[in-house]
Image (tube, rainbow, N blue to C red):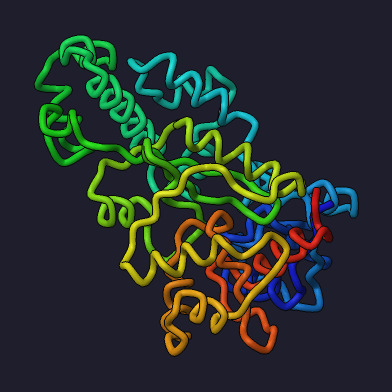
Length: 348
């Protein structure tokens, strides 16, 4: 059963219109009889008029109606029902540019699609579709396909049109990018919010709760120097399955390979984090001693905060020497949730 974050944390999220909490809880307004996402752009109700619910069903059962502005029923913290079918159709029909009329024929309101992709991917649906299509084209080129067949198979009638679209997406012609490595991005739902994930052929290279202040795509491109495209990847599928087992309390050690380059010091800290047993915690000072840098407690804390493969590299298991939680990029309530889960208190 999904539990609510602390009340003070929920009030703060509502006040900040924090989209990271969308689907984690819903806020209802007693005076209007309406319930919203935490990120609803409407003016927040007074504290005494707010009520919080873990699911949209709970809010509706209590007699509240869905807000017409933020549409909390469109996505209950999980991918909407129409998304998988649309992505599968996009892969089957690469020539289709997916105008509004094509979406309506599938029974999907175009405005809903635009809101979802802008909110969850930071780009328009058409930009997402183009990057996904170009990503598939790059995969085909890397596997030896001829440029002619790739261009025609992706709906382009000429080399020049394909080259122009490819260059706008990836910043270089197909010939230069053919042998480049690639990073594939996706989103993974969890009981405590959506996770941004990214993988190379070598392993998972990003797993973090949304949103951070910087764009994952920009960070990945700058940090790894590779093309970044949305799509599917075997490593991401393995990550989804392992996270599902983890949140059910049935997996204690992740097997997915990890790609997390950093400074020598950062990598030593992250390696030490992965030795903390499931269900246990240690202090920043403990980690400093473990890597034989006993005086570098503050630097350990900074390296901990630079970890961008959450949960798998378990920075949530590090607490202050006095036992206080310390910091956590995903929010302290999530850190507490993960610790409770590993102690057997929250498995779903």
